[in-house]
Length: 301
Image (cartoon, rainbow, N blue to C red):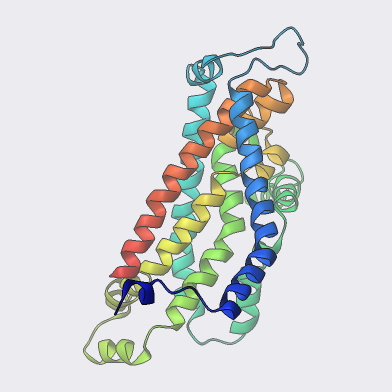
């Protein structure tokens, strides 16, 4: 076979189809590319600029001063620690209780369909509304539901937002994301072969042994997916913090996302806020790359 035969051009009809597909898809690809790259380029540009909205005398190229100031600021490291605590705490609660609830709701009992609907309903509540419900209805130290319950048994109500702000915020976010974990893990449990569980039961394996040696290994991929998706969203928790504690007391509940908001829109330091945004993008991409590799490894096994 000659080289000219191997390099034969595509048929006219196929070439026209490719040009038509490019003409249809090309504009949307360009719009999406501009949508993603223009804000990133502007953030990078402002992170190297002296730009303060209330001080017009600050202008010009700042080199790495914004990054140096941010990395030397104790509030930045506190926000990183709070972000890590929030993410890890929510993951432990949602994956742990989500697995137990998924196993429970996989069993047959009266009203199971209604219980499944109720357990996933918090996931459809907006974060702002959920935070307001917990702050003013459930945890208020004077007229909150939990405060009244503590008074009924002779205990002194606790001002959760003041004494345990980060822990309370972790519980609120966990309540929002627990239904998601239950939904994914319950779907994974339902795909488990019933004959395998029945064979283990007939061989003498008790409920605990079946849970640790059959159900947990089967849920490994689903748990990895839950961890990956939740982590990506938990790194940017903002509405719950704004509504409940506004980052306080002090910086006790300030995560990286709220710190960037505070620098850019409360302190009007656009350059410093942009530097924080670039650092947040780098951290998010490192975490996402690690999680994607973990998911790929679990899918291959």
